[in-house]
Length: 398
Image (cartoon, rainbow, N blue to C red):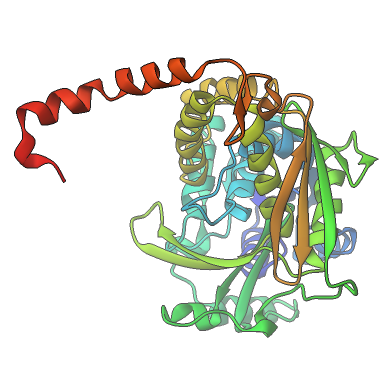
């Protein structure tokens, strides 16, 4: 008999894993790591089902705040969008679910950790790598992957042992999290097609044709939404999601390179991430210097890629986080957006640190910090390398 911690989501693969390992005489502990994607009702149902499946214990680990403090805020600081499109939604949550599971397994001195990932996706890598690093010496069990089990085989096994639930394969599969919902299957399997309206979970319910959204930031973190202050950043994200989802904002699909090397396509709806990141980017344009923006963009690309590709534990990550944090010291003020069904536009910013307020001059209007002669001299010096080059190579002038 082994003491086994099962990363339990309540889905088919993890339900099968709990029952199979319990039936084989092991001491099974079902653990659901919640990063904001489960409702209270879902968590209660998970607990009931875990015991029905044969688990000795069940526990929910709420790591939503940890997920924000150790990852989400840095993704906002970095305006992280994979392929300038996907806000690294559920994929980033998997890392923190794995971290929480590994930590719990160490605490209870488990012999093994089991998860339900298949051999065809990214999640197997995120779980396995995290367990190998944070829970060394603890065995990893993956029945679905190792035995190439089909959905029907798992359903038949559960039914044969008295467990019945609605595990019908739907046209679309959904992963819901605090940072967005991913959508797989259906029309996305055809590269020439997009998702129809019925594939999305959130639809236009707003009664006003337009709405203004004001997001206030203090040192890069959300401080207020439409004038309502928030100490709880998760609550602020949820508030923005509620506002944006009513206009069905944040829908898109992304084609990218998976960790295992094949191309993958995923649809998503992520109102809060899209609105927060674009509002934050808008504010940064006015409050950061040119080179702050440039170098922050460089490291942010690496941060997002490392996070997506299961390299959160790479030692360079806290170094990047330190730079991102430093860059936010003057990112203060309110970004103003205008929302409409299925989209939004940026309006402007109100910030005490707005560099546009410089007394040196107003762009295209009047200079105050230099004379016309200064401008002429600057332009002449700036053109020196080009004048020198084309003076020697006149035939190359375009």
